Length: 142
Length: 107
Image 1 (cartoon, each protein chain N blue to C red):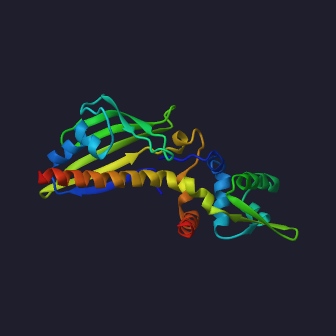
Image 2: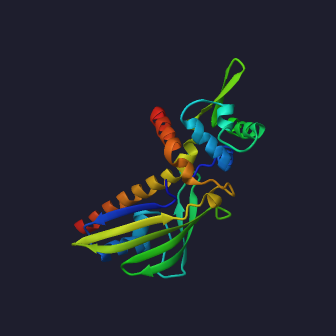
Image 3: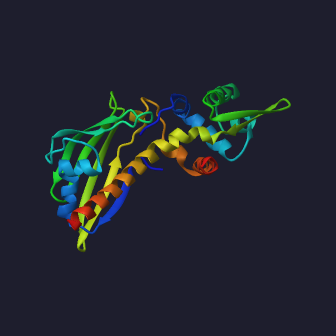
């Protein structure tokens, strides 16, 4: 178990097209959430995650553009909570891949300290036996 | 997106308690068998077990005078889930991104 989420995504569209989908505020709102993103370093913006009545109270994600190199690299912070309970970082690296684009995505910085207000819990317990026990429990529950 | 269960997270915040959970993940154990893995005193081990019991992460079985401890992994759900919530979150959104780009191509 890691505290970074990584994905490798492939798109048949060109890096320019993918870049536009990642950095144009209106387009970004179509596949993410309403936002006031602007593609320049130092710009502060938010994603406004709408509430689901009875299920989820809604959420504001506060971000700052940390890196913005068209059309190859976009990095922004991703902060959630009143006292920055979750202070993480999202990055996209775009590479040409034949006619299309390969995107390396990373959401990093899931520190337990930040997420759970001081609980110094490490993910190492998720390795090995305990992880298997969890798997079994999950199977039983589903 | 993120669930918090202070009882569970507090309980697993201590390395000795994580170690205990790892030990009993294999199967039930007597307190002595657990204590044998630690330098600390048996009462100290019992105290950690008490925290785990209170959080519902461990259950206690009595066989005569003997007490055995068993992992209750269901309670670890919130711990396992909080990062996987985020993974699902992104996977869903990248699906949407893909569909969005396809739609654009058709125009």
